[in-house]
Image (tube, rainbow, N blue to C red; front, side):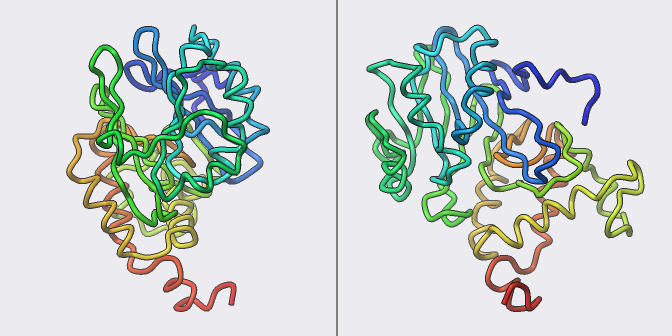
Length: 273
C-alpha cells in the first residue's frame, strides 16, 4: 500500500475522478468504485456490493457531492460486486432523473437487483453520456470480457479508462497504484518482485485473466480497442490502477503475451476438471 494515501477518504485520481472504494487486504480480491464529478453533476461507475454501500456513499458525500446530484449509475456488467447495492443507491439518490446505463445484454440480469429507475442501453444513447458542460464519457463494447455485455467507460477529459474486469487482478499484495513498469519484461523471478520483495503483481493479473476471461479472442479484441485510445490512467474494477505511459504500455503488453485463457487454459493445464 502507498503510505502517503489516506484510504479513509475519497481519493482524486484524475480531474474530477474519485476512487470511493476501500482497501480489503485480507480478501485477495479487491473491488474499486469510481465517481466522475463535473460541476453539480455526478456519475457513479460500478457502485459496488450491498455490503459496500455505506462506505461508498460516505466517501461520495465527502467529495462534496449531494447524492441527489448523481444523474447516472453505470454498470459495465451485471455481477453482484458491481450491482448489489443498486436499491440502496436509488433510495438515497431519490432523483426522478436518475437513469441506469448498461449494455442490452446486461440489462435483463440487472433488473433482478430490484431496479426502479429507467435502464438505458448504451446502444440507444450513441455509446456515450454527456454532462451539461460537454464533458463526455464514451462506452466501448468489449464482449465476453468477461460477460457477453461487458463494456468499458472512457472519460475523454481526463483520459481515464474505467476498464471493468480487464487489467483486474487477484491481489494479496494490493497497492493503490501498480508498481509494474518496463523492468517487468526482463524479470526472471516468477513469484516475488525483485524490487519490492512482495508477490509479483503480474502473477495476480495473469491468474485473474486466465480464470475469468473466457477466450483469448475476446481479450485480444478488447486490447485492440484499448490500443486505439489515448490513456493517462487505467482504473480497473479489481486490483491496482495503472498510471502513466510506461505502466499503461507494460500492462497492455503483458496481457498481449498470454496465449490461452478461460476454457482453453483450464484444458491445457488440467485445472479444476
